Amino acid sequence: MEKITMTCLECGGSMRTRREVVPFDKPIGLRGVRVNTLVARCPKCGAYEILIQDLEGLHRAIARAVVTKEARLAADEIRFLRKVLGWSGADFAEHMGASAETVSRWENGAAPMGPQADRLLRLMVMTRDPVSDYRKLDRLKHVARAKPATIRMIAKAGSNGWRVESAA
Image 1 (tube, rainbow, N blue to C red):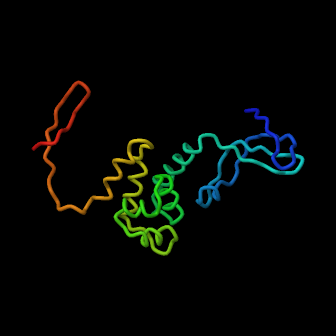
Image 2: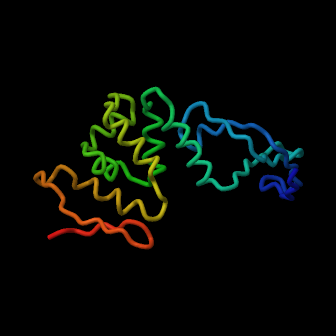
Image 3: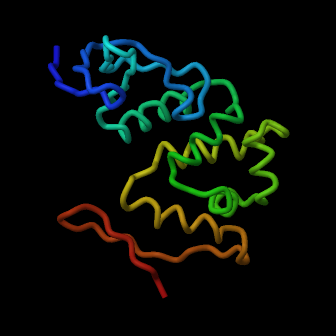
């Protein structure tokens, strides 16, 4: 087991660290989530700290579990997934092609998210790349605003695979 030396911020005592399964629903806003992680406890005053390594990785793992469930997304899951994507409510509404009021109703449980929006959100989370995918997903804001038009392209095989170019 990992040995971590910590001093209690409450009383200055020496904290003891051990692995525990602890509730994690409040920090992320999802009911029923528990995490097996290191917890530092002060035997002197009872204060404790939950130690999470790679918090972003934990969020991604929880998000994968949420998007692969069969049941429709619950309100707290929709809010969590929006936050995993790093979007405000307004940004999320733009990407989903919905009003800010609709997003608020989804996240507060006042209205269920429709099956198409549910699938779109899951797809966005599953294909999310923390660095480059944000720009690609920003294009979703503009989908359905322009008239339908078929894209014209030329695909060329090269030493690094296929490359697609716009055709005039």
